[in-house]
Image (cartoon, rainbow, N blue to C red):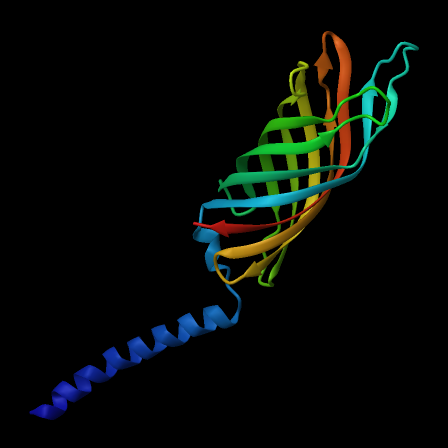
Length: 200
């Protein structure tokens, strides 16, 4: 009477073994399990080695070089599709100053919306493009501020460290349209950035 029971267990064992094998094959083929994670948050450290100012002086000239600047940009993104995500980033940039005598170093705060297009694949490397747009304030201690919109774009690549963590590097450009007392005071920068992110 035991043999029928044993024969009845054989199909169940085979089904279980096949399921385990398929799971291992999926991992071996590099299936991106992190695609089910919708929220990504992280932080980027920024260096702006080259910049320009749209700045009207007494002779009505506009194009001036900017001193190099440093910044930090935390972010939160939400994946709306396998290839796209939207998010928000409060950027802070230090040493915002034109290369002109008589100007003081300022700090720039930008509240940015982000739209990211990515190329998910089975490797550890995921290239992406990023478009940003927002509103900014540049302020100087005790001496007023300049305000206005900004737009920008970045291209980058993240390196996946397991299913949740990744590091990234990116380069891009940000254009400012700030004004001070009705006059132009808009910095633009080439941006390089490195950082870390985690998915939830």
